[in-house]
Image (tube, rainbow, N blue to C red; front, top):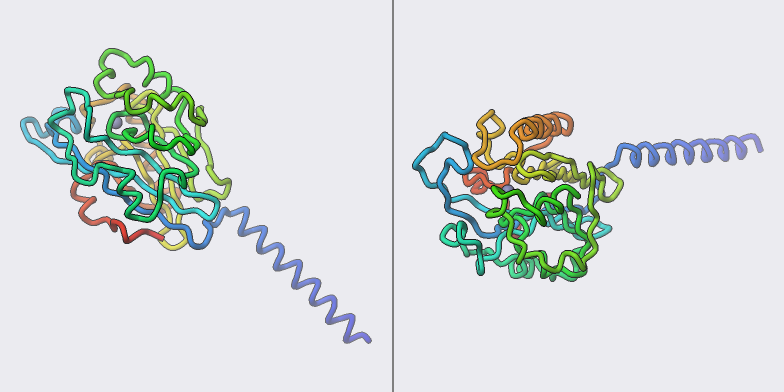
Length: 281
Ligand SMILES: [Zn+2]
């Protein structure tokens, strides 16, 4: 009899310990098993290098990749950024845009998905090379900083050439969450949006934390080249002081998460990344 009671007590204790372990795991925000992240090549741009690096690289041309990212989470598919349409571009971009792989809908199709299957879209900002395919995703919920929506719709004169409203005319009818700060998309720490203004008035970046790879910081244009992380000022920005603060924030996120940075436009890093059908897990 005593033996029986003892066994029962042991079982109850084991159950309590197991339950506590599950709770601890949840509170630490472990990324769910099976979560993946694809880097999707989405065309490119050929530009004078000083556009990207202030006064360094004067007279040089650089061809930069444009990337979008697809996160497969058990609770839904998330797209980060939407590339650049090849057709109907503003004049200052018309001769720069590289059309190979630029069609995001087609690129998604190659991985096996259609726009209707994308639950959430996070736009780092609304510049022409990050928001090209908004109109093609009517079923998605968009996460954009409120300040970015305001600036893109009523841009300052020097910003006008970088926003291309024709690409997101339908956004006003879509489901948009206008953020005013950071946001943990699934509440489990696996996809976290953090505010990194400076490149634009309402820029944001994303940390994706995967079960095997660990954390990947999708910087958007807060830090588009490694030179920017080392202190080079960009050629295009809304506010220099805020830009520098955001570079610092990206560095701190890298340190906090012990993660790696995926630069939005670095041709050298791009050559080393896994591309579909390969993915990060
Ligand atoms: Zn930009």
